[in-house]
Amino acid sequence: MIKLETLRTFVAVAEAGNIKDAAERLCRTASAVSMTLKRLEHEVGGELFETDRKSSLTPLGAFVLETGRLQIQNYDRMIDGIRAYARNRTGRLALASVPSVAANLVPALLPRFVRDRPGVEIELLDTDSRNVLRSVESGQADLGLAGRPLSHATAAFEPLFRDRFKVICNAGCGLAVAGDLVRWADLEGQGLILNGASETIDVAGYRALAEKASMHVRNVTSLLALAKSGFGITLLPALAAVDLPEDVVALDLADENVWRVVGLLSRSDTVPSPVASAFRAFLLDEVPKLAHTLGLEVMNP
Image 1 (cartoon, rainbow, N blue to C red):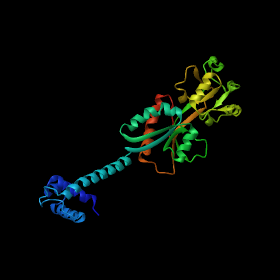
Image 2 (tube, rainbow, N blue to C red):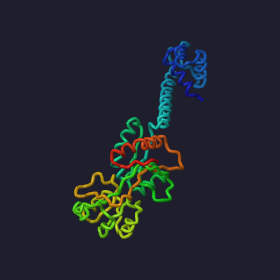
Image 3 (cartoon, one colour):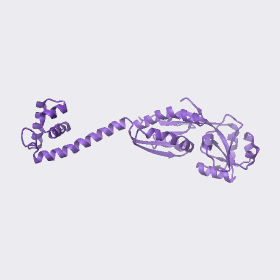
Image 4 (spheres, rainbow, N blue to C red):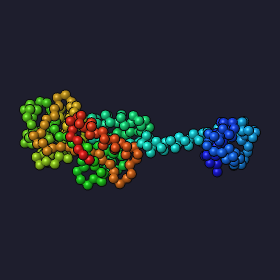
């Protein structure tokens, strides 16, 4: 079997035109190089050089040189790819995120992460917290950014920040016109629309209202459209209320204990890829800085 290093030796001699210069380039002795060439000629079954001076190739030698260069290049590219993957410079990262984080945090993070990793392929899945968790647990996503799981989650959760829930309604509704802090009693008869984020609210006043609600909408765009139409009101975290449509407002709650905790979800039963590990470290370092600029309360993992 012809070894790759044997081909490297032959290519070095063919390019140098003599054994002495090739031996210096390979950091080997001239006699060792000469023996390698003889072994290669024996293995291929023919002479590779026209003379002992190694200055010109036989037709067989020219063919071996062309083929050998190609094999060496392919091998070196493969090794470079493996090393780049190990150093998180290439590979694929599947990230699942709730819409508010995908729209307001991820765009500020990804460009900086991929700037020095042009070989990394990113897939972003924008969905609600429940499906973010499912995506991570199933392996569809490497990492997830979502609210704290309700219970029985197999994925690990590292809290990053929290933001208050706000009442989202049409600018002309009575709650908005009054301009006061909204109490739970004020929401009676307002047509509460449930959503994925509000599922995590575990406050007696809200739960009593949620039990009477008959509509659940998971898509934020549809949710805001319904609020704008005056069909009903809903509760969304502050980050989801950054850029509201015209005629839709976000009102503060009188109850100051209604928060959404957002964190990083990852599988605890598998070894993450180098890219996923690097992105996790990047998030844990960068998200707190970015959260401060958006007025979010940073949490320690």
